[in-house]
Amino acid sequence: MRQTQARLGATATIVALGLSLSGAAEAQGKQPSAAAKQTARQLLVDCRAKLGANKLAEALKDCQGAHAIMGVPSTGLDLARVHEAMGHLVEAREVALEVTRFDNTAGNAAFATAMTEAEALAQSLEPKIPSLVINVSGPPSGAEITVKVDAETIPQAAVSLPYKVNPGEHTVIVSAAGFGQRAEKVQMTIGQTRTVDITLRPAAGGEDVVNPFGTPDEALSEGEGGRQIPVWTWIAGGVGLVGAGVAVGFGLSFSDAQETVSRDCPNNACNDTYTPAQAQALQAKWNRSLGLTVAGSVVGAAGIGAAIFGIVTAPKKGAPAPSTGFVPWIGPSGVGASAFGHF
Image (cartoon, rainbow, N blue to C red; front, side, top):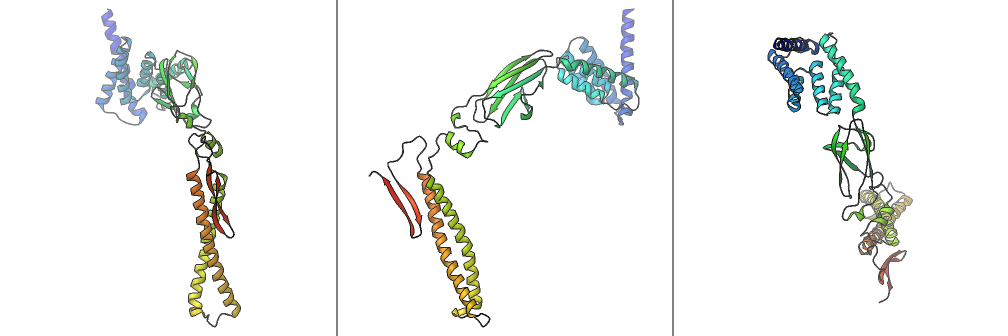
């Protein structure tokens, strides 16, 4: 009698699966082949049998295959149940929610039942899923921090916010440029919210790490191995840049004057269209542009050269002040350098 009931139960299951999966094509607007539907039916029967026998890994494989073929509420619900049995609560709820969003406008009764059960499953799983809160300290504010939970990278904006994970052991890996990597094992239980505080320490040579969002002066004062660049270096460089700009500007003006003289005043004699005043103005433009171009070039070269010299020869931070040195100068009468110190 029991064997007969078992056979009837198995037959009823297969018939129910057949009715359920046969409506999949109509509900989804596509037509799986007869072989595909038959394969999905058998995989689903095997999945349920293995789930009952606690062969969870094999059951998961069968249910994933059936759902990949059909993608209907009945296959999705069984897949969610296998995930739940394996402790994959995050995946189980995600699949269950996917089932609830299925388009059952055709009104398939089996699908409607599966969708209702999937919604109840998703609601029951929500409070069971653990949350992991990761707080990272050590790197300066605004620094780029990489946080991984197992193999998954958490977006930086989500760090320090509750992050959903499955129950069980997880590995949290945190790293940042210039700091040593930290890895911690975390054991999570059903429904738990746990905060993990991780402090990163500067890596070897990490003393050079500065706040990349700080001011340039802060970066120079904190970094090891920098140079004590004297103030006159920046002044000389600024004067040199101004001189170079003057040379370029008046060089263009001189080039224009040259072209005008070549065209209108060959052999230093302007044509009849020029009045004496216009000819004198052109000559003045020639002389002024030429003189300022030369002067700007000299000042620019001297200033930039002095700045480069000052940067290259500046002592490193922490080194004793030099006993001798030179300070370049630029004046109306020329350029030069003054020596200082004890010889």
